[in-house]
Image (cartoon, rainbow, N blue to C red; front, side):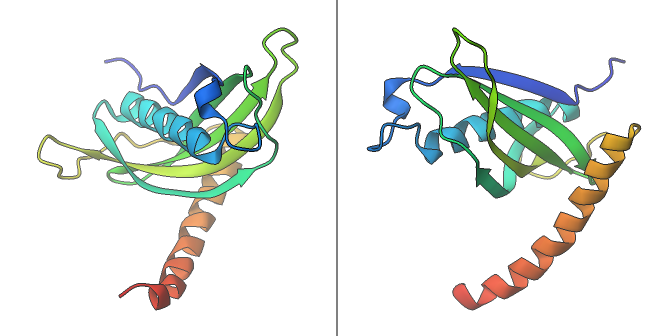
Length: 158
C-alpha cells in the first residue's frame, strides 16, 4: 500500500480574467485556487472524493498581479474520522525574478464522501516534527474557536 499524499502545491499564472477593477487578482479567483488545492490535497490523502465543509481565517496579506506565478500549497494538519483540516499558503512572484512573497493563508476543512454523499473514514494523520505538532495543536484550538463563532452566528440565521 502506498503512503497517502499529505501535501501538494498547485501552480497557476494569474491571467487577465482573474483581475478586479483595481488591477489586482480578485479574492474570488484566489479562493477558487485555494479550494482546488484543498481538494487535491484531501483527495490525495484520503483516496476519496471530498467536499468542502469549511473555509475560514482567510487572510489576504499582499496583492497578486496579472502575470504572476502563483503557488498554492496545501497540507493536512489534522484529521477526524472523515474530515481533514488543511493549511493553505498562497505565494506569488514574477516568473522572471522568482522573488516569492506570501499573499494569502487560511484553513480549509474537507470531508471525504462516497458516491451517495455519505461520509467515509480517512486515514489518521499523526504529527511527527515539532512544526507538525504545533500546527496540529493550532488546528485543534481553531476547531474549538469555530464552535464558539458558530454559536454567535446563530443570531444571523433563521
